[in-house]
Image (cartoon, rainbow, N blue to C red; front, top):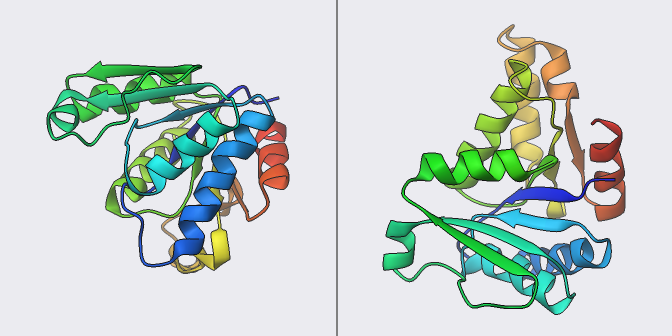
Length: 184
């Protein structure tokens, strides 16, 4: 079973309150399943919600945040039981440490930072730089346009079908975790 899941998601709340509630539930669900949340240690937005859910569920949290974000007070640094926060010097260090710690990766709704993190680990997987599974948690169809774009990229000959097929896409936590685990 996956023990350490890196989750990429928005540092903002977005316009749909259901996304915040779902991020909280994912954090709580990970805690209940004994899966450590590995994330960017943000204190606001969906990042704050998922970490609060994990805290409320009594889970383990491994957060990695660059110093400049701490200086801007964007992080969740308080010492909740089961929470470890590492402060690093750069975004590159943050992503490398999260990738090293994780058994798998999952993207929840977010913006360009979420996309950048998702595409990086997916690219690394496609290039066989790691064998860890990558997934999209498709809350209320949030990722549907991206999935359509993935199909279009494949149809245009810029991506092998296996690259898309290697991405786990779902909207139920148990299902997504089980398929990520099976892909390891």
